[in-house]
Image 1 (cartoon, helix red, strand yellow):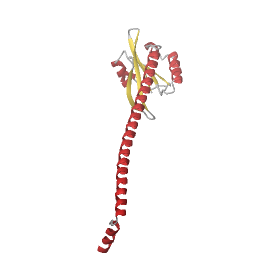
Image 2 (cartoon, rainbow, N blue to C red):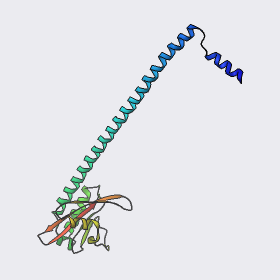
Image 3 (cartoon, rainbow, N blue to C red):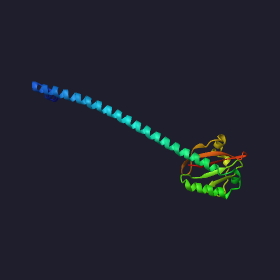
Image 4 (cartoon, rainbow, N blue to C red):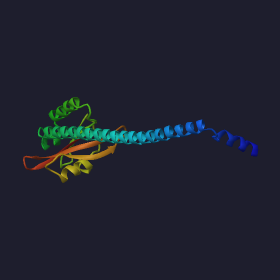
Length: 186
């Protein structure tokens, strides 16, 4: 073993001036290159991280703006539709209202269900599910609309059998007497 170490040391040992000069020259070239490479790597990784963070922030802001525009458009749709329906029509399950709701569903394929209900517990849905034991007054969208009667409210998302959806609801004063909300999951 001792012979092995002696042989290794003799290979590394620099005896001539030429070899010493080559070693110094190599060290003077290698160390600065390593320093430059390390600083370039850290600088590039910092810039890359900064650019990626900037890109993520930009994408999040764009997504936020897009979602706000979608929500605003849906709110305007709710406001427009609620002005075309009155509580008596809901009580009577008006075919005119049902046709209006069906047409609205055709024009808005992103919607799953459109529901209107009033304070009497009467309701209508599009698409029409037929007879159901359903009281809109027990629903979150109805209660949320009741708490904020002058604005369109967006209800937190819910897990359905096939989708995750949010609801928009709006109260309408019907000739100063009865009020009713309209909602749809989106």
